[in-house]
Image (cartoon, rainbow, N blue to C red; front, side, top):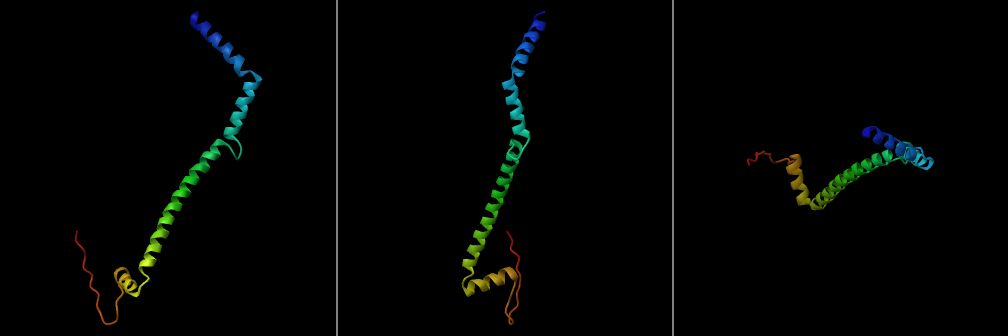
Length: 105
């Protein structure tokens, strides 16, 4: 009997609050704001994730730009440019031979 009366009292309270027109209006409004529209929470979370990914890409590209600018400053003299061409692209002058010696750790 006690369990039956508990559920009956609970149902009466739930029915009284959930069927209240103001509470019902707030619940419906909240569901609409969450699931429907361009400014829904679902869309906002998706856009926030996209923004984080784009910011990470921006940081990667900015680091690559900084590295390229540093390399450009390093290659400003003819000697450093020649050294870079010999090391990276294995270029040589007409009267010389290039030998590759592997580095061992």
